[in-house]
Image (cartoon, rainbow, N blue to C red):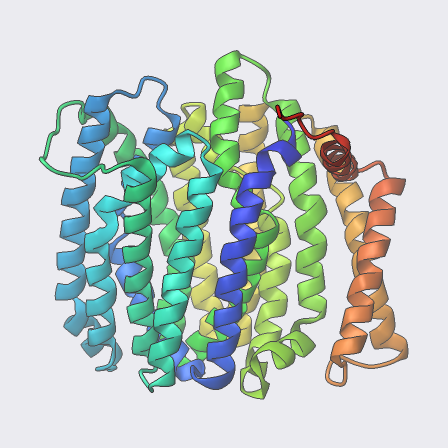
Length: 489
């Protein structure tokens, strides 16, 4: 399995979408949206997301990975998506006022109403997008993601400039859902969830029940920090934590997260051919860690000057939080596809047990940390990431059959490359300027020197990622040298 071959389409899509989201977040944070307003939106969004935890009901994974997919199953999936989305929208909007009363924040109610209404558009997206992923149609995915991000950006910026505050982000979310639905229908042909038909729904319901438990567990782990911090500390703390978490998540998705969508069907094909998964998994791990570890370590080292440069002085409280969160991402990326591979290999029940255990660890550690301080809450993410490794590593070894020696060797090579990547910036801090004085020029110089040192270390250690780079460059040069086809006069 070639990482470069699988990655090209999703990376283009991720880069474009992340560039839009990243640019918009910087613009809004510097000029219009402060920690209080971002925190308010984050609480509303987290509350709605927990209600909407069953929005997909495993439909995307089912449609993308089902070996014997027919029209009846597709129609049943569309019908289920309509029923589920309608229920989510009604419940989300009905709970808007109780949530506002619980947090003593009247502004939560209109935010939850708008965000909840956006789920009415979900049935027009879920199955069409799953079919696009099944066909590995990277072009359509790119158009969909860029269109949705652009709609969000235009609406959010326009309303924020007119003083809408947190409501600008809520209406931007609704615009994003609408754009994604329109483009999904356009690119996949008109596939409406009507008339309802539940013939062939039994296998979907069986699959979706287990998959939804996984989604519930993952959503609790991802969204409870906003709700817990908002309840134990305040909404400004939620905004600072969300800014740090968002920046780390955006960067992780940019460098590695986008390939998950394509590796799922790719590993399904390896499974169907009866090939051993271990060697493929070791290669994927090496490439994930080789590129993401240095990125996250660099983000932790540059947290303070980067926050100041991008978002301004009022967001500096996010810098120590970003350091802890970025370090925790190093652990989380060490075992990629920890959900997708057990599903593909029919180990859903065992996966659910481990997923519930890791969610429990996440919530307990977060609550303990938030009880003391916001920075302790961020530090709990690192403690949780260590526990997470121990929960999944043995399970994946049994499931996939990777070699312990091969995995540890890849970790060692990626670790050396990570040290090399951050060494120039550490040297600048030690002998020239500290984080509070570091300017853009010095930051850029340290980053460029780190990239060079990283590449040299990949080459010296014969890292699999370096071979991917050289192979990609060879492919590009081959295309450039290829003579143009002759045309008839």
